[in-house]
Image (cartoon, rainbow, N blue to C red):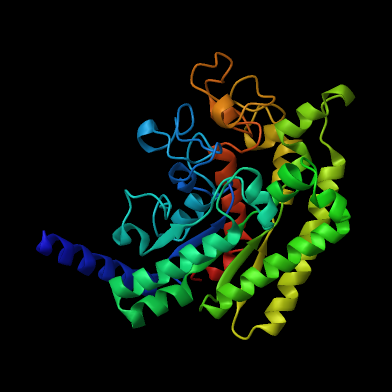
Amino acid sequence: MAHTTIFRVVLVNLLLQLQLVLANVPAVIVFGDSSVDTGNNNQIATVVKSNFEPYGRDYYGGKPTGRFSNGRVFTDFISEAFGIKLAMPAYLDPAHNMTDMATGVCFASAGTGYDNATSNVLSVVPLWKQLEYYKKYREELMDYLGQEKAETVLREALYIIGLGTNDFLENYYAVPGRSSEFSIEEYRNFLAGIAGGFVEALYGLGARKISLGGLPPMGCLPLERTRNLFFGGGCIEEYNNVAKEFNVKIQGLVSKLNDQLSGIQLVFSDPYDILSQIIQNPELFGFTNAKESCCGTGYFEMGYLCDKNNPFTCRDANKYVFWDSFHPTERTSGLVADHAVKTDLAGFLVP
């Protein structure tokens, strides 16, 4: 057993050395919500789960993992694009150890947001707690690789931050509290302030390559279209405008922090435009349906409502932009990731 452990440590060290030579990014480290959660919610007491069929039916081995998808999610594809690994391990998953996580790890929790009040709605892992887990991970990585090598990995790693949709759709517009406390503009400023503080905290812990994600056209999610059925089932443009205005604010934040924080490489990763193109012209991307989701009736099912016994679930998720009423299919996530790698994240790739 001791010899096996030593062999694994040596192998991981060799792989890391190879990645440091061949790539600018030896690891991908992820914070966020269900758009990037790879299974952390499986380990906490919340109703926001997807570790059951038909979730994961197109994942390796056809098994549900806790990803809110029929297969892989955005950051899995990013990790693959950087030549690291095909799937991101969830930090809280006891099936993974430092051998798995030395080249990247996911701290994201479905249902969370920048605002602590958002994570409280469904009892999920708040962003501040994800940062605490990361601090613990740093210590574990240093014990595993040694301080010098671990610091190199942490400095050269790509940090991906992807959240914000829940702050608006599951908090501000859904439950009383923040909407009476803040105007929508004030709430955007409040969230942007938290985002900036989080980036600064990561920077203070040694992170230098950071992707801060924007919001998607959230008024076009099938669930939001369903809420708009009385008016024809179109996208809720108010929500789309909120997303666009928030993205402008995040872009400004990125510019400001790049000027203020020496040596940081902070980029804004914008999913809005590519997703809008896919939703408005699905046939150009090989899809046949961009309005309803694959799971169930396609109008409202997600989480436990998206179950394997629902007779309406589609047979071929590749034809659908959305898997459930809130989340994209694996194929859509792959297209968005490919776009990000060719645009926003291109500067992190070896020429």
